[in-house]
Amino acid sequence: MAEEPKGVPLSELSLQQLGELQKNCEQELNFFQESFNALKGLLTRNEKSISALDDVKIATAGHTALIPLSESLYIRAELSDPSKHLVEIGTGYFVELDREKAKAIFDRKKEHITKQVETVEGILKEKRRTRAYISDAFQTKVQSQLATMNTQ
Image (cartoon, rainbow, N blue to C red; front, side, top):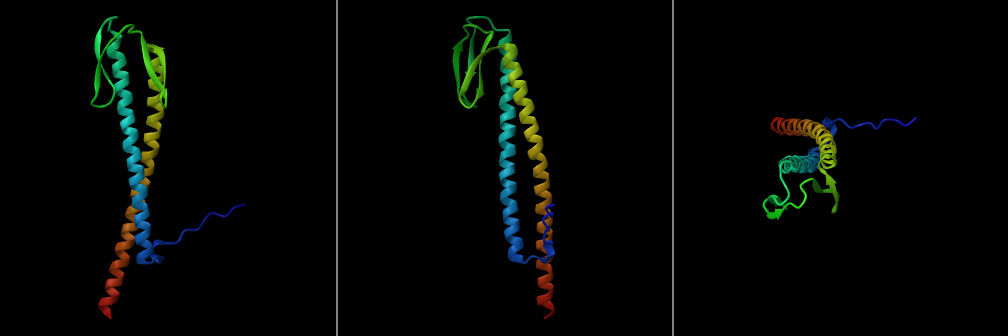
């Protein structure tokens, strides 16, 4: 049986070690925060895609619409067949689908991204808690050293 790794109590670390630990924790926290923000952006874009599907549902052939290429760039397009939709199914791969299949793909993406958001959100909470513990230990160590210096 493998033994569980034993941690070192924060109170036993030097100020320099606590500082390094705090720096590493902050970097991890920033990484997960960026990941969280990116996932939320994906979720928003997916919601816009679902909304666009609903908007096109009532369109007829020959209908003119503004099609988003990015957040701020739209092109005018004429719908030749509003029942068919071009959907990205992977990195740079698109497929033409009917409305129901396109909606199913967007719903699956939404479910998957939502699970990822929840996972990263849990990690963020834990990292914030860890950062608070390290910060408290650092402050306690500084106060202790200042008190020791003042009594000498």
